[in-house]
Length: 139
Image 1 (cartoon, rainbow, N blue to C red):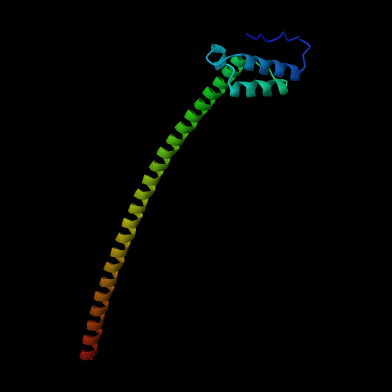
Image 2 (cartoon, helix red, strand yellow):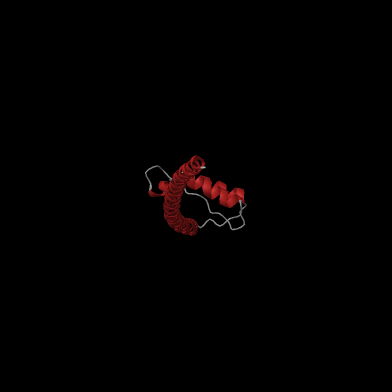
């Protein structure tokens, strides 16, 4: 069994990453720790070290969980706003449709009234013609 050597507090980033890679290589498949030293974990931890970032995996997971919860809450709020907006839009469309029907009825009634006036005018013209004709015959 190979044991990874001690890592001094003065080690460089490259030394820390090499130590971690050696630890990764020292863990045999089937060990519990092999599920920790995954390629994704190794890439993440190397990136954290290279960028002078904290390597606290639990804090990172908690932060990601909080971000996800916040994003889900924000998405739920947006969905509720969208649903309310869709309902308001549907109500407004229904009101507009009702107003259109009402206006179409008013137009139809006005056209009927105009038709009735035209008939009345024609009848009056005919009576006037008859009166003028009778008056001309009498003279």
